[in-house]
Length: 285
Image (tube, rainbow, N blue to C red; front, top):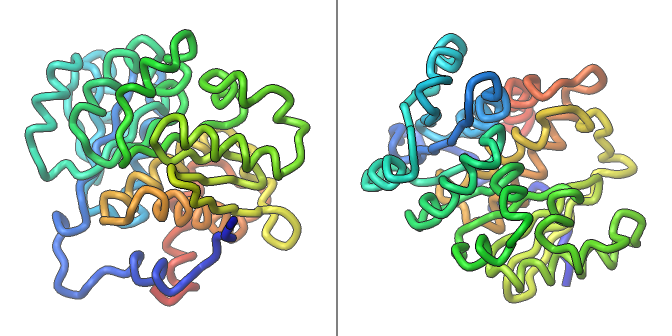
């Protein structure tokens, strides 16, 4: 059965913060960034994770990119992260409750960092370069995945990992997109979110959800650079707050579109996290 994603009371409850909460009770997201000049995508993801309610967000970058990030980050913390060995050391801190890898990470750095991140067994979002870097041998990635991983490919990234499932998918009816996403989730053992105007989310075992952003919920302004990076950060932030991967993916997709619809024409990716407080006020959260 395919369930539509909509605002539900469990989602409302998950988004609310108890009066007696403190920052660590809402989770700590670690976003990995790539080299100098490519940090915007990671900063978008980090900002989204913070805005959606994660208690803390740290962006980890190589030393060569440190000054670039430091000039633009305030509430988001910054750490130097030279290699995968250092990442494993960081993950000794159990307060790091969710990871986001891929936006602006770079293919070579992603190949090194993704296995180390998955070794840490934290709720993890893999997007962009974290997916494309395994195009030559997707099974290397699949072997490392765990049940608390969310993959967020667009059609191009989906085709790199699942070429047999993706053939002709761009023009295929929705039913085939759903079947392909379900097959990908079964193959990987992870939640798979296939991005599009009709976003399909599937988890191993057969549960599938559809977020339909067409008709009255259309948000064509999301066709802008960096929008997907924001979605990855939203999902990571929600998982850091304790939402299950499948539920966080659905909630992130819903909020992503709601923020775009609230802002309207002229939207750029930087606007999406900043629109979330308005969305939350409208929801009386």
